[in-house]
Length: 126
Image 1 (cartoon, rainbow, N blue to C red):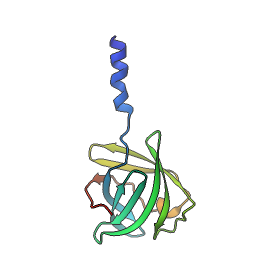
Image 2 (cartoon, rainbow, N blue to C red):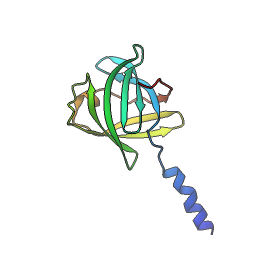
Image 3 (cartoon, rainbow, N blue to C red):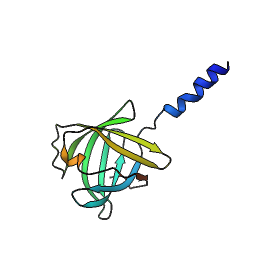
């Protein structure tokens, strides 16, 4: 019985929270550093420029195992085309999330430098 308890206790530590229904604010270089908001819905992520509240990009995303997601541009001002997906990893810790590139051939996303932690926030629905 103690072995089962130990195994069951280890499972929640390995589970990662879904991005769906979360909103994060942080700095992206597009190309100059600017504060952006990433609003994750069920399968769509909206990227807003925080100060102007302008919708800058809309992307489809799919949650993957191992704390990863794949996103692909639907519309917006980045130089990424709508056919090129990018795979990114994320780690949520309390009210912060860190994003890191796994494999993304679009320099518009990889050069955005999302390396600093994003903080959980609220944002009106688009």
